[in-house]
Length: 435
Image (tube, rainbow, N blue to C red):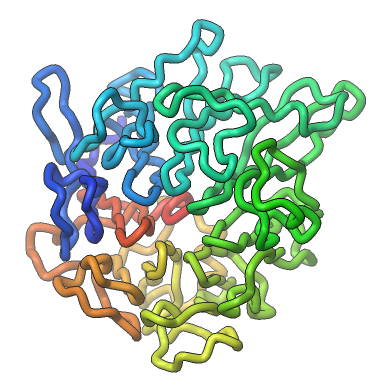
């Protein structure tokens, strides 16, 4: 049996509503362990109640998808911290300064459904539930603000989960669907799904969006209205492996099985955020006003706004995408509102090509290093100060001996915040890290 390895979710940055889950509402300038409500004593513990597989950050709230270990048993749960004044956490109070389980109060017909994906707009939360039967559809729940149509045409009260029906937007022969990637910006949300029909042996991949649309972030063909409250099918020619949503633009990464396809970029190009490099992308991410590509050689390319150094270079030019100067190739990237976290490969693995196909337990065992740059007003980068960072600086491992030997298992960027999931002992970032 695999031994249990202790984990910590570290957070830093903006914390006005307790969204860093540190049991206070002051900004943090260095990475500190987030706290989780521990039952039945109602105390707070830095040990997550399971394995964190995804994190999503709104303007002032945070969602975490937590899967219990086999010895713990039970189903995956969605936990939340921060602001719930718009109902985005479904809490009876205005929020929580530590992570607590979301009280979803599912209806009887959803008994046995399990959360699989999460996303967060500014004050809106999205949760995908998967049914126990493969012949039933996934369920998309929404909580919080309905601004910009983000909760659909007929939302329930803010703190009550609304089941957003996607079938009206799908082909009439669709019997059920499975949701795959899901992403949200402050004002729009996009998901990809597989639609099943008795008339075809293979499911049909479709991409849907709702929310703000005036800037063509949901495609140029849907820019006639300021926002869409009913989900609409978007003209994406492939099943996206990854969707990234900026404030007014969207990026769609083609699957690895379609090497001839290019990243699709829609929306505002006011800051040059759509001028992507002509590189085959392994990963794409979007800040509020920027776009980032990790290619298969481990290089990070950045374009868009550079008002706070978020392109990783001192030049203010935004018209031309350029590579970020890093000491070694990158393994993963995570992007927040206007900042970036980059996990580097070890010195013994100069190329990312082998890493992209290597098994998890075969990856290099060198010390994990995370470099950061960009907007740092709230201590977002975890460097102990609040000055913007124009060229990449190392943020992990920290100087404290207490974290020696802890390995990076995931990282995420939020709205003025950064998150790193670490595990004691052997490990390495998972494929979901930074997603």
